[in-house]
Length: 428
Image (cartoon, rainbow, N blue to C red; front, side):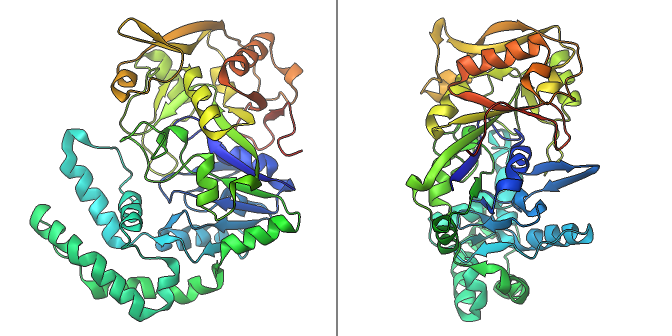
């Protein structure tokens, strides 16, 4: 059976949790391979809505083994809070497995994230302040704390001391904050160890054995292509590899195992935080999309920036990730619009760009070139086949498919779990 990757093909918040949920009954493992608790998935099951921040969305499906792999940075306090909240709602979370090699977000990472962002002033990146960037920076600088370190108090203390030696100078002398006590951090982390211990495993080996046994494994990316630290709108990006390539490095599974790459795109575009956004809307249409689409962050509650669909970004994501199938979400939000513009190219100082400009300054100054499609007024939330959609909605989907770089295999038509139109099998 295949290893499947789901990635966001825009700036995040595309509805990856819904896509995972669509496949959940056919999955054995769901793996979160990057990011931390800085990006959420919202999944609606019946009348219940679940907002997940750190946990893989597969944790909501009985029988599925949810895995937090080595590419994730883990805020253990948040992890336990989410597990407790799901348990209180009657869900079994006992199958969760956490990589021994995953890095830990500590209290000093959160502190540094917040003070650094404030220090940047007008040059702020727009982080969530949850310590993700500083935790990844420590990982690359080889002064990070890993999950396995919590089970050796001496090693843990040495690593915390080493990390804080420099950071306390920075906090005190540059940011005018108090120094952080080593004991304070060590004691907090050690307090989590015994509860965490039964969840921890060599997840690379676990997933390799699962694939060898013919199990179906889904790798679920956090954030999205345009926030990838290498391929996104740098520096307005996340600190991890949010593309399909990150599924291999972030889980310890070889890239040849990844057989199906599913890219999630909204029928329009959103992003959170600073950075270029060519199709961004500041008018009544933008207000309509934000309010009707409930475009407020699952994790932060921040209003999202909204804009029309951007085909060059979809094509870029298809190329960078090797996308085999798109899932188009939130088509229902466009209902009621008389005309729906789609960005098909950019104008930069009179020069047409059909693909993303390689120069970030050009992209920042890009003006969208639009093609406009007729809208529809019919309610599509009850559609379950492509033929159930109004003709104009069908034409819109087919037009996006033609210009986006890969086939559109499923279409989200509402918030309900079953409000989806499947055109092609995403696994078989």
